[in-house]
Length: 161
Image (cartoon, rainbow, N blue to C red):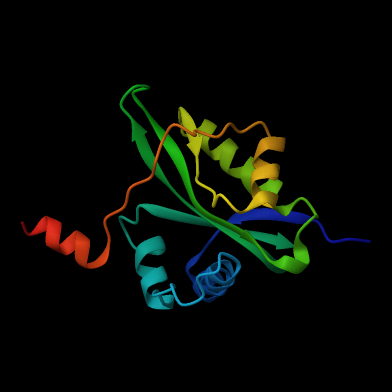
């Protein structure tokens, strides 16, 4: 008999688990050295008063097998908040059991409960399994948009011009 998959909001005692999944995700996305965070930063940014990002944990029985981090953005055209999925990850040995779909459905329901007009995320262009999954749930790619980013020294330099 297989264990039931469930989703619950993350709590501060999940910080180490979240960090573990962040590191697994970085390896999967071919950026193993890109993770600069630690448990204290996760506690501060996800669980302190006024935190603007949130997390959920995906469980199979009592075992954490995945997570997601999300936050709310805003659409001026809709005049509503949107739910933005920053990261979703399910451990390699737990894929194919519906965990990713359960996480996405949980977040879609969260978006509806918060009267969000959109539920959005980005996916790496080489991640065919994820793209196929997102297509299968009815999500539509927004190919006309290009993501831009300022980070690190470029951010500092621009802010201080």
